[in-house]
Image 1 (cartoon, rainbow, N blue to C red):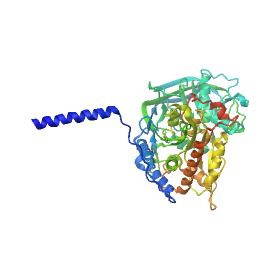
Image 2 (cartoon, rainbow, N blue to C red):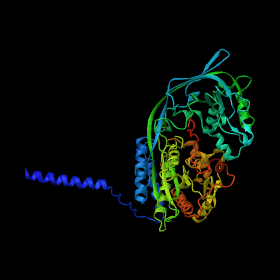
Image 3 (cartoon, rainbow, N blue to C red):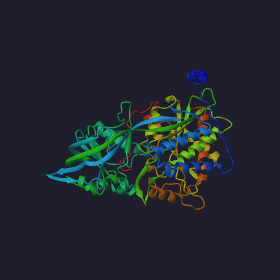
Image 4 (cartoon, rainbow, N blue to C red):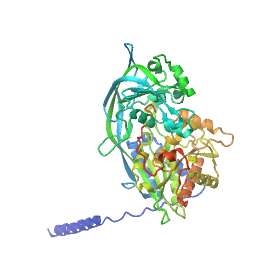
Length: 568
């Protein structure tokens, strides 16, 4: 018995010692940097290695809330650790992002137009799709209709699509977009679904129907968009499990194809083709739309969770280290979907494994520098960008550092680097005092800066930087170049990617990605981060800038965030 008693006594002593140690909560061991290979092309090899892992079939397209995304976030966290960056989430490197997931249910859905005693039923998927509803699993509305043009209220620009129209108690029918005469920034703002639904809700509409035009479908064909109609949508949720940033008064929101538009719009002396032409010409006017519409939608709603991955490089200046420059890149993609040529995994190599890999390389360059930056730098791999910028929105509303300490955002999303180029496009450079810093960084790296080649696409409000902009933080968004080297037509190659591979299984690591250009872009990102972090003053919005005047008050915007169109 004695040996057992001795062992038992020693065990109790050991347990007591361990308990005492646990209570003292010793600090975790410091994160050490891995050796840094600064030889030629090592940066390109590191970026390629990251892309090949993140875009591998093993990760199943990295959709937010899935096993594949969880694996990707684990990988990025360990890359941050190896780089020597400190964890800056709420749970080590992680920040939980609570969401609701909603999926369409075809059974019970209905879209019926009644006029002059006749009923016309639109066909699910082929002619229409309802949006998911995060507030009610079963939603239904029957009401008269009103056509409200593009649903834009911009009195400062002399434009009001609602003038003279009764919207309350009606289902609003509208086109996408905003008037072409608006400047790029205001057109982008007013074209957003967020603003349109907000205006409709404020006027008492009970539902909404977005009608695609021929020009809409030239850019995004209806059959391609609805092929993945079963894919889940997501919203942020609060502690009570309620969806945030939704419009419950709009009972049903639906979308109609351009081909089916006459079933809805050819009435009361109006003709769809003429309305499409008026829309293009900027002469569109709203009108009461004869008849009533009966809309019904069914949704499966369930809680979901994903996570942002957050790391911090501490600043060296006693006064400035409490301020933070934020690098961001979205880690998620769209997951598994409708097969294309037998492949159902949407890997997202350019969108956005490459952007994350470039951010990781920029982080490595900054962390390995002999002279740490004066301000601190955060690196955030955000989730659920493809669901409506949700991870970035959550971080902007609930930053893991004091909200007022965020001084600038440098975002990286889908750099299309499939051709050798001499330039980079810094989208949004003209909005703030970031411009001279970006220009100086480009000169030092030896890369030209080109203007946004497609301002009509409004990409400044379509990626994660917009969540920071809406929080009042000056931001830029860097994408790949369009000026090819050696006679290569980079613009044509980039356009072919968008037509043939964007949000499709073909966006995989087999593409001829120019990792040398990616390494150059990482060097530029790091140099911009350095200059912003070391500047004597924090960046500011330019005087009279639209986004600065609307959002740049130093507070987080509480205006609703709404997902991208359901037919994405």
